[in-house]
Length: 510
Image (tube, rainbow, N blue to C red; front, side):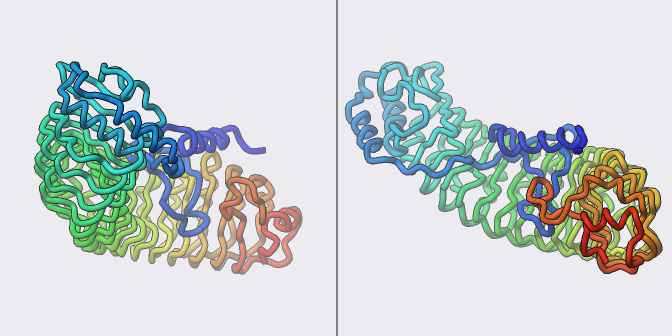
């Protein structure tokens, strides 16, 4: 029977990934699974914070002829000259937006072009005779943005996220001098980012992610010194990262990953001392991780994974005392894992997999009480597995595909309350399997294959009743989790009672 704690973990993740609104869907798991063990259902980090909303899950809905006809009828029958609440020009551009984006097909178009009281129109806020907010996110707007939006001269918020907007971002948005929030993420916008946006000196939030934007990131965005949030992730942006982004010294979140960006990480980004999240993953960046990043002491999330970064991991990253997540996997990093990581007392996830790291595993990692996910697999690490790891609170511990030797530490059996996935495959581990591993009753996946282990399979393994069985189609076993003891030097045939257990959980263990 599954434990209550595991059901809580699964329920938490299912709610966050399926039922939560866009702003609550946090970026956590890798975008794609590299191996079965890479796609685990790890518990969320302490004080977990959302900073990258997900794209709308609503499928594209094409405007119907009836909707287009009704939109045209409404636009042609409404007379902005009768509106007194705001200038006629502001009414006209709202009408143009309605016409251009199939207003009759919006999810909510209450009062639009039906009353002369503009402030009664859904999503429109009026103050002192001007439109100051236009908030129509997740409202099924479909089509291009119209020209003339700069007529909304007092606009402070333009929020059209998660719609079906297409075409280019109008350059005239750069003349909205009072604009503080420009939220256009989650659409199908194309073309380049207008250089004119660099003139929006009052802007605090610029979110253009999850679109089809191309071209380079304009260096002029570095002029937006009031910006606290810059989301350009998941587009088709290319070229290098402008060093001018280092001027954004009020920035809390920089998310520019999942773009084919090239070149190096500008050391000027180390000036973003108020940033608590930097996400530059899934690009084509090369060169070293700037050692000056050790001064970003407000950082809680640092994602530089899936690039072509090389050189050693700066020991200065050990200064980031607030860091929760550190993902550097799938790069070309070499050298040893810094022992200074023992100072990352708040760290919940450390992923250094798929690099060229060498040397031993720092014993200091065992003292990180919040660390629940440690992935060091697919490197060239040597030496023994530190027994100090048995002092931790790991949920996933993946040390596979290295050059580790010596026995499996008995102390790993102390992780009985937390460990769900343990992967030690493809090393040179020797001696007998410690009976203490039978204490790990929360395990759903245990892979000790392709080592030099010898002796009998411990009888205590019969306690591991939650281990997935081959072919189990239910979650989480459907992700490929299993018991794998193959390609060792274990005694054959196995003795009872583990023999019957192995026949069920790993029938090809021998």
